[in-house]
Image (cartoon, rainbow over all chains, first blue to last red; front, side):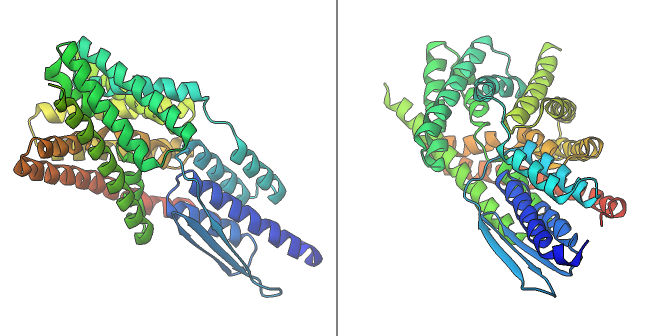
Length: 261
Length: 147
């Protein structure tokens, strides 16, 4: 590497590290993976002082350059969703970069592509969400055909509610609450009319499974295991709040149903 | 027998469908489905051997974690890709529902009981992920000496 070229290279390296971290964190990766990836990319500079500090909502990274000023950036992450394909792709790019298979410019291009990459089309996810309660119902050992129909109905509600509320950008706490309330009410009502009350409990349980905080619990556990107590506890709190939203929703739905004589 | 097969089918479909909801590519989503299927076999066997729900959840999630780590090795992808969709099957959603149901029914003793059951199930999942992660972490450090 030419001495005069170094400053631009370092800046590029720094921005690649930041971009990789940003994609990982906003796609729902664990904290240690974000810090590890950033650390590995920063180490490519050959300097000792590459550090990063990551919480679920922001990335702070700094690189001490002995011959020039220290670079430090803070990036706030506001949108967080689970997009595991992006986590995997970013991981591959970072590994190729560290292994010397691709250049920095190439890595930056790849990362920008990943950031813009298309997800599965919306209708696919909505369709899956529609059949999700039925799948869970079978998994929990349900065999009643009429109950399966009710599950399909609650699935349609889940998908419709998700689409509608995403368009209206309802706060996520109320998104879960309203979905769960609708599920509990619809399931009780439909089970009553189809005389499948015996399986009403199982139907509601199957239908709230897509809403329960599985991701938050799993990531919280893994964060705590790797010593990231701050984000671990933050995500545990998130799990509890989602659980509360779902529980309150179910409670509201059941309560309204009981008001009907 | 029929019910047995339906449960396995449900396990496969939920894990694979959940994977697609989290935007996992199709090939890996099918792998997730396979992990879901195998772990539902374990859950079924454990339940039919009439051991406690906590222990059967622990065993099933233990298998999920091991298989997820192996799949991640094989596909050269982060473990999260396989772990999140498959752990989803065993998250104690039923426990949460029962807590609320008993509270609405006015029975706080039942609610307390379900609360502790739910926390125990969550603890069992945590313990399973913890132990498998620790075993595999030791091996990772030997293998990857990237720069």
